[in-house]
Length: 179
Length: 159
Image 1 (cartoon, helix red, strand yellow):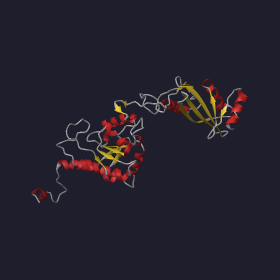
Image 2 (image 1 turned 90 degrees about the vertical axis):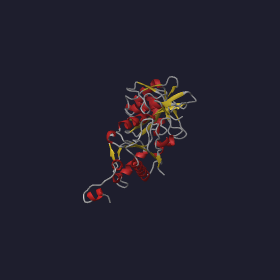
Image 3 (image 1 turned 135 degrees about the vertical axis):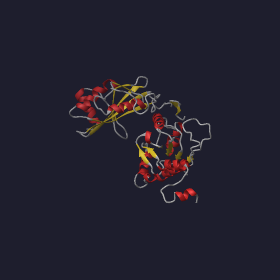
Image 4 (image 1 turned 180 degrees about the vertical axis):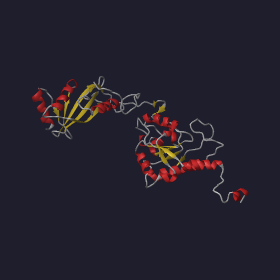
């Protein structure tokens, strides 16, 4: 019960640190890039549909990478697609996040050994924040991935901006894996 | 008409010497040489009693033991409701097959696929580019002796 609390008690003003306000805003409106690569995309669509309803977390699809905050790599990344993924990632404005959805984009999945045309993990071309395992992951798993991403965003600080695309020599946060 | 009847009909009407191969399981087929392929295909499409107006599938095949490549054409007539399988074989070192794109438009992408994955060149195709793999890909992946490139545009392919 400080002076400020009393002063603003009856008005619509909340006092928080700038950092948590920014983080709160960021994590509460994660617009994802609307594209899918394989069967995982079907699960992603199911997650966005009314049963699981992405929208209740403020997660909505966006058709332009320039307006998207997060990229869900939902499916098999072929060697041909890899350069396109890279280009899409470069077109996103910062801060930008990547969720790798499913075994294929995590590690190549069933194409790990004999898929001549499949990239063995999307993290070879772009940095990944959250890996969601499964083949394909259920909508709950993808939601859990988003909750982990939100957790990560709420721990961000403005003093030490996150390094993504540069080869950062500073300590880089280890990617989180959904249980 | 069955494959045998069609072969007989073709030989009788057009004086060919086609010989059907009987499969123990599945469809029988006729083998034609690349030099007469287009002529036979045109006849199959246009003859009043055959009218194969639908090319259901065109597949490239690698016969590694014989050092040969082949193409299989699965034809269907929606008018007479009969089917025919036609095959053509070419040597591996000069795999040129005449295109049937001008007869059946289906062949356009199918021939590009056979070119991309097996490496058969279709003479007379309007735009024989790779259809699945990138244009700067090396080799033809469905060849049985295919060796995968180690990296593509500085990204490891994982072998």
